[in-house]
Each structure stands twice: as structure tokens, then as C-alpha cells.
Image 1 (cartoon, helix red, strand yellow):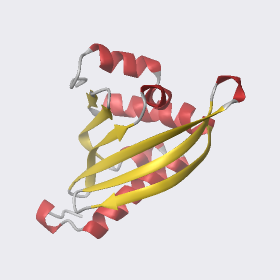
Image 2 (cartoon, helix red, strand yellow; image 1 turned 45 degrees about the vertical axis):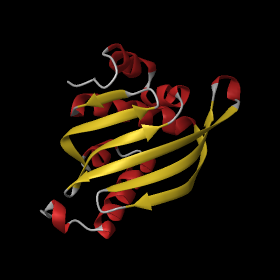
Image 3 (cartoon, helix red, strand yellow; image 1 turned 30 degrees about the vertical axis):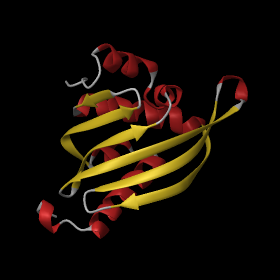
Image 4 (cartoon, one colour; image 1 turned 90 degrees about the horizontal axis):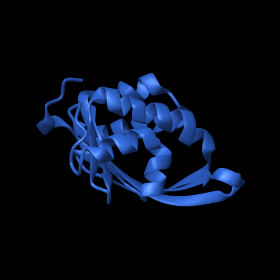
Length: 152
């Protein structure tokens, strides 16, 4: 696309964010990763954990798509907001927990653009939900590095 940041539009941002969410929901790891810049940054709030780099983000998506999505029994987009540089989406997600009981989680994801690709995401969710999404190993790794770290 090659658009400079000043030429990037709300419509382009909406398309990019929607495409990323659709590919993620379809479980397409490679296509999801192709929507990201070379060194994406992901933040998890309110815990304040940050991870960056393709290797950690790929591990995040491998767990999300391989474990969390298959346990998802339903989700509903509650609202979304779009600007020229970001898309925020609020979801209610039902996940099958151990023992077969359903858990309901509220998640807000804010995707950020850097031209035609996403530079990362801020995810607002409970620690339990984040651990289910990313896996304990990855979360323990980035949490052990301290608040605001997790770079490769």
C-alpha cells in the first residue's frame, strides 16, 4: 500500500483491524502474523506486562489459536471505535473452563497501525483471561522480566 501515516484513513484502519480480527477468528496464524510489523509490541492491562518481537508474538498467537480459540464457545462484539491510527474492540467471550463450565470474560483490544500494518495491541482483560489467551509459560516469562518489559 505504501501510504504514509498522514495519508492513512479511518476506512483503511477499519479494514486492517477487521481483517486482523477475521484472520485470528479463522485460526490462520501466518495470515494473522502478516498483518503485523517486524517488531510488534503487545501490552496486557491492568497487569502492565509488555512483550515485543515476532518470536514472542508468534508464541502468543500459537497458543491463542491452538488452545484458547478451540475452548471458545461463543463471543459477541459489544462495541468498537475507530480512528485513523487505531481500532478498539470490546468483546464478551465465553470459554469452556476445566470441568466443562463456561466462563465469561470481557476483553478490550486496541490495535494500532503503522502504515498498512499493525504495530501491536493493548489488551485489557483479567489476568485469568490473559493467561488463558497467551498460556502460562509465555505470561510467566514476560511477567518475570518486570513491568513494561518483555523485549526480545
